Image (tube, rainbow, N blue to C red):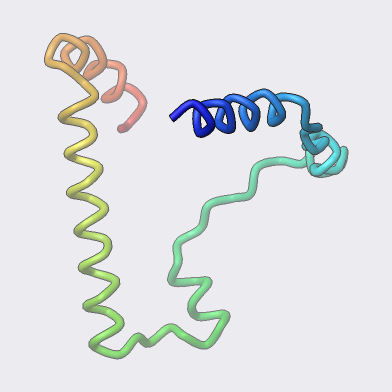
Length: 98
């Protein structure tokens, strides 16, 4: 037991001595100053790529994934926002169009 504990302690101590990569230089200054990309409907993207027509199975898969994501989003909203918070936020969300 003691050798395993000693080994784990040594690994933990030595990992604190490692250098972290410089992530600040991973994004260029031009990219930092750039505007956020515009969100566009997927139909236009698919049409430009010649994929405007999905066959039945692809459309069903995408519809099922979208339904799953909506259900997960609703579950997260139900868990994360209690009734008091929901009542406080509802007028603001309606004002913003959400």
